[in-house]
Image 1: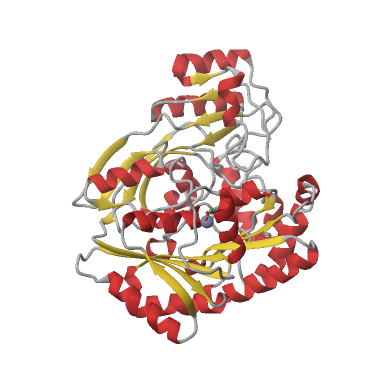
Image 2 (image 1 turned 60 degrees about the vertical axis):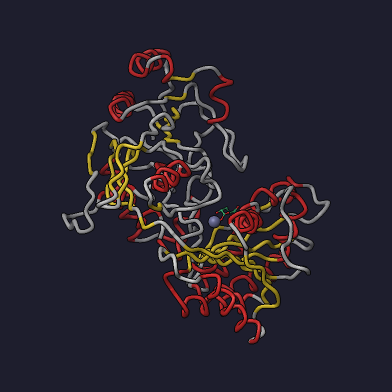
Length: 475
Ligand code: 2HG
Ligand code: ZN
């Protein structure tokens, strides 16, 4: 691993490439780039490079390759696993992509948009909507997360059940490889079997194999009918039974299907202004159903009512509220989307971003909740998330009154406790947030053997000097 300090000469050369707006060296300007959203890591760096074009990215990477300077690509810095912040050594240069935020092209015939890596996800959604289309990737951090970041982490979010993860929404990529060469793979082809799919190697690589600078994204017809419902369900099995009912009725209409525990909803109501329970009484389990169709006459509200009535009859659903308009739909979504913030405000919490086969979710939630309660008496499991695709955030909130630092000192025990159940059920310890820095030490146990060896060989081949986001993903 390179350990060359970032020298004043290097900063002069960067400044010559990037100009005054393109290089931050004032500690106050750099500070927000050094720590992650969760506050798990406090990194150090003498500078943040802010290139405005692919050519500038390439020039920076070439310089870093020449001087063996480690680089940490960063988009909106919303990583949940410390994937986008430098380490404490002060030897890593942050490469912030946020000035590269242009929409290069929208093609409504091919249903594609070509955008730069620093474009904020929400801005991509808005641009697609203005063109009369939909870019469906949707997640809590969409107002800050960037296209480069969501592709580099293969983000999932709320609509995976219908549209897939970021990988499935990408047709082509442009990237700067670790030697500083520019690879233009901005092809908009649905069929392109031409050897190894380099684009798919870079997606999910978390910046360890190169810097994504632009992408061709898939667009979809915009929804013309929609319905959102908030339901109190009997238990985790009932949540899944309701999912099957909706899917059986109209698979293509289920845009999102999210699970929330009573504890999680209580915390959102307690901490977030404007969040209220849309039902008369509290429950231990809830789901949010979001239906959408490009057919204006899809009759989704009627469909939701019919399916919910059947589910009530079957004892799966105790109560439900269907949004009467867009404002109510947004209020329902806020209950779900404010879960991370509410958990943060309640105190220390440990996140477990895990997935299991969809059919195993109820068992996973129950077994993990019991094991966690036994591990730390008084701690509060807050499982929530994307039950329709099998990805649950099996989070644990500290016991009331416990010292937060003492609770966080148990983080690895907590993660091990959840992971043991997840492994037993054939799941993954890293569903949608990635490995970053937080989970590198789990890679050997979960992916060791030929899989990890192949990953390490790929890393060595593409990045022989180990300058791209060192200390992330691979142990
Ligand atoms: C979400 O689904 C995000 O809201 C964050 O993936 C999950 O805070 C979390 O654990
Ligand atoms: Zn999530």
